[in-house]
Length: 204
Image (tube, rainbow, N blue to C red):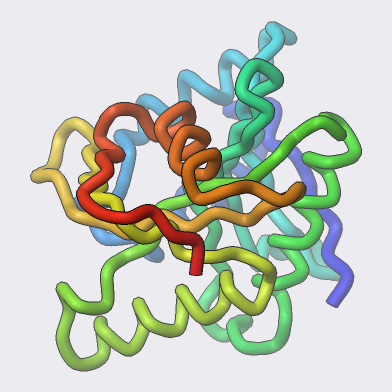
């Protein structure tokens, strides 16, 4: 499905309200950055300063926001990181998520063609039960269908600063062929020293 991304460039943009509503209702509290941090990012974007961040929504033909995403892309490490992607309830399962993901990767490669990989965190199915486990498995399957691989042999704990840290998996979408070692270094460049090697590295 073709999706058009619209950037949030002002706190006064009404679509930012829809972005925040979808953000707060789609992710558990222990995975949410403080809204003040998001507001600072939008203010940086609004100021015209050069920033790695993009906060985007996907409106449907009627202008209703049906998806949101927050990502960053860096020239220095030639990598990008996806912080959040969510589709509105009632709009899931019809290709919007894949459309948003493909639109983001296409934009990254258009604006920063030397980017080598797209990195992100995903919940660990093995740490969940029942419905939550199924959802975590589906998210990993979704990203695999769209070209990503799990980075094995690592331990990663996500921390949003105001909630208890959460163990997560890391996935890597290669834009050029990477060795597991190069993918690990990319993940550390983008996610920090919380990414630790604990065994043989693998992309699978």
